[in-house]
Length: 89
Image (cartoon, rainbow, N blue to C red; front, top):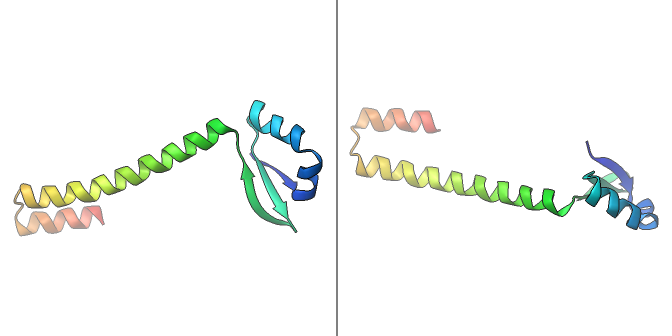
């Protein structure tokens, strides 16, 4: 679970917080006026999140593309096309 800190406290304790985030793998939610503004993550967590988002986008794009290929190349009859669309929507 992410810890929370306000922006003023973060400025005072930046080095300490940076070490907690990096070495203890503890993310922080930084708030200003009680409102969450940013999240501090260690670099590995950031890279993993970025890669996961990239993979999810690829899978979604690939799925739409493959459905179009299946419908065109496999020459499905109208009932099968309709069933495929219902399952995928």
